[in-house]
Length: 392
Image 1 (tube, helix red, strand yellow):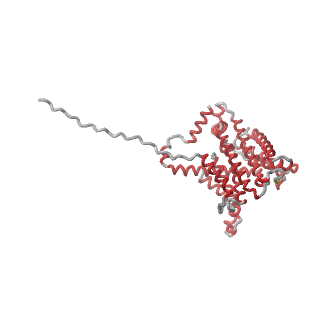
Image 2 (cartoon, helix red, strand yellow):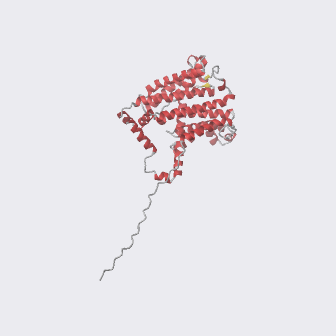
Image 3 (spheres, one colour):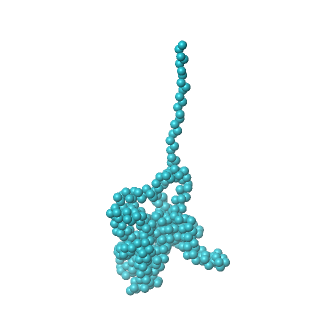
């Protein structure tokens, strides 16, 4: 008997599941493009009839609104210079106003006592401010932490006393010193030219932002950031932390002095208030409000703080506040009290400031894409790793 041929059942191929592709993250708009658009929009504001009730005293083309917006940009540039000192280098200084005042007072004194053109006087005032920042930084950086903050405060207080004592009639004492407009171009003098001052303030802000970005991304910027995180490691690989910190200190002081000169042209006067430690603390609040370590956060924080400071003064004297009961009228009539409460709320509920809040908001909106990449190193960790690799 022949055995029947056995037939095997057909083998069915199992479908191999295709590897799941991680969800694509949304393409981010380059930061420089957003910045360029913001600058173009800001430059067009003097040409527009754009009312912002409660924010500006009138339409954007009016001199009062242009003056306020120019002041916001000047303080934003000052906050950027302090960001370089505190947010990048980690140096808490209570004397940064000294260099801002040195630029304003130095230019005002040179224009008042000499016959120099504006640019020449500005260059000499900037050189004097750089020398001052070098001397103060060389002494202050011998210590660190709270001691560093106290030494910078002592230098700032000395400058404040000198401005108020009016040595040889140079500073004008408590009344300050006015701007002598003999050698100042007519395009920068008078209420009718507030538009030009607005554009000058905007150009100053852009220039300071570019310089701060360049310094922060340079090798020196990487070293000073690494020093802030771990100074011993930087010393081990042979980098000089003291010299790099001093360089950063001087650059921040020079930028503050340049901004102080533009402030003098806008305000037509330099007063002792800008030499006080309170003025430095205002710059610190601007940086913390915007988000420590964020350049655009420092700009936004300064603009928000300046607008609140100016507009809350109007609110404090309004009939609405006057009609409130004493329990509410007394605190609301003090703009500093309202600003203090707002600052406390930001520190408590937005530890990263405005920039941190915006990052968390956009992170939630990314949703699955962010969750899929959560196991990888963060951007800050990657930047720190690259920084240390470059230093090594």
